[in-house]
Image 1 (cartoon, helix red, strand yellow):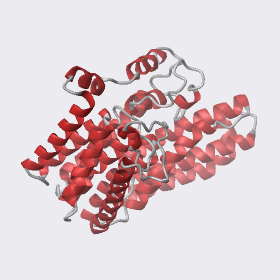
Image 2: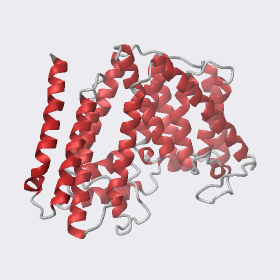
Image 3: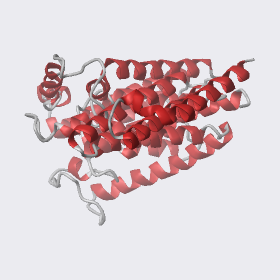
Image 4: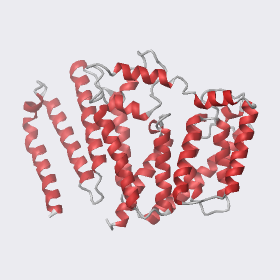
Length: 390
C-alpha cells in the first residue's frame, strides 16, 4: 500500500511537471517565455529529486526537505538576479552545487554494506596516518612540498599545516579523525593516537582541542580504546607544551585558548544586519550570501562566520537552520536505534566532533573537513539500509 502511494506521488509530480510546462509563463508571469519554462522545469525536477530522497527505501525526510529549501532559495535569487540585472549569480549557484555533490555522495553511499564501510574506514585510517607522519617531517623542516598559507614559519606550530595548509584546520582535521585510530586494530594505533594528540596540542588550536576532547569523551561513553596511563602520557605532554609556550602564566594560557580572535564582533555584526526586512532573517538570502558582502562590509577579510550555525542562519534563515537541526536530530535518532557497534560509534563520534568544530570554524566550507562530515552522515544511513536489507 505504501509503495503504491509513493509511486502515485511521483507519478503525480511527473504529470504536473510535463503537462504544466507549456503554461509555465502563467505561473511566473514573466515576458520571456523560454526563461519561464526553464524556471518551471528546474523547480519541478528539484521537487522530483527531493521525493526520491524522501521516498527511498532508506527514508531521509530531513535531507529531502533541506535539499528542497536550499534549492528553492537558490533558484529564487538566481532568477531574481538574472531577470533584474541580466547576470548569472555564480556566487549563489556554486555553493548549492557543492551541496548537491554531498547529496550525490549520500545517495551513492546507500549502496554500501556495513562490511564495505569498515574496509573504507580502514583505508581512511592508513591515509590519515600518512598525514601524521608528514606532519613530523614538517616539524623538522623536511617538507619540500608545502609551506604555510599564512607564510609564518618562525614557530613550530606554524610549520604544522599538514596537507590542508593551515595550522588550525589541521588540528580540526586530526581531531575529527581521532575516532578512526580509536577503532584501529593495529600495533600502530597507540603511537598514532599519541602522535595525533601531540600535533593537536602543538598547534595551539582552541577549536581543534575542544573538538578532540568532546569527540573522545563521546567515544569513551561506549568503548575504552586506551588505559589510564595513556591519558596521563597525553596530559603530561600537553603540560610540557603549555609550560614551554606560556611558562607558568595561566593567565596567558587562558587568554589564548579563551580568545575568539574577533569572532564576537563579526557575529554581532551579522545579527545586527539581520534585524530588518532586508536582512531576511526568516528565509535567508541564499547560499553564498556572505561571499557577496565580503567586499563591502566592515569585515572585508571575513568570508565565513567562523560559526556554521550563524553562517547558515544568515544564508538560509530560521527555516533553513531549523531543517539543519531536524537533520541532526534524525541522525542521532538513527544512531540510537543502531547496534552501537564500534563502526557506528566511530561515525557518530566523528559527527559529534564535526558539530563542535562547526561552532568555532567553518569545516563544511573546506573539502577535506567536509568530506569527514559527509562520511559520518552518509555511512550511518548506509548501515541503516544494510540493517533492514534495503
